[in-house]
Image 1 (spheres, rainbow, N blue to C red):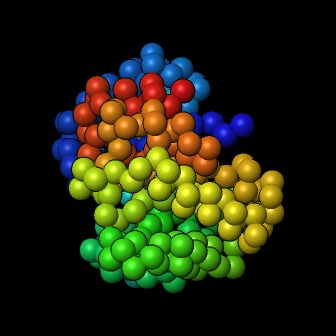
Image 2 (image 1 turned 60 degrees about the horizontal axis):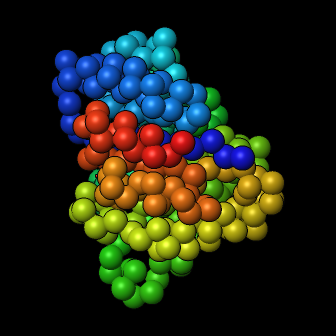
Length: 253
Ligand code: PEP
């Protein structure tokens, strides 16, 4: 039985006051709507991670970073290591979010190094995969997601991959208001689970959580969660609104 996982990616939003306020409201509200029946995590901007982690330290809401670098220390100006994130109370980290792939230009190879470094550093990565609209229209979804998954996990053992969560986020659905249908998401997420079984083993494939992300809202979350291979939701825009985020959590348990 896979525990539902609802993750809120705040992207480059909030400030020092509103980040803590939002975190506190989510902590008290999620306990009320879901108890401990769901894993809930928030992903604030780097500069607010420490204060949000402090505000959430007595709660069951976990904190994650939106990115990490693949080295543990040294001359990497501007970058943040897995041990630094651990040190300030982070549990999770997003790797390969579509905005990092397509706006910042991260490659599968770099993302693979980040996933490996995150796991070695004791963090739990969420590897994001997903196709562009042009790739879906050219019937390349399977090929793109397979490549991103195989390259993203290159060289990682089953034991390491057991620390991982995967998020399927079709790029055309992120921040666009255009959600994948539950059937479209299920089809790709089933492919992802079968790939994990092929690359590793059936037990790991059964246990690993696969989230859907892309314009998730209170109005579509329950239907998405009813699909067999959708174990949780990675929520962007709607995670900045307490009521919306809580109602998405409620719909998942
Ligand atoms: C995301 O940031 O991963 C995301 C899915 O954003 P949104 O929910 O706004 O589409």
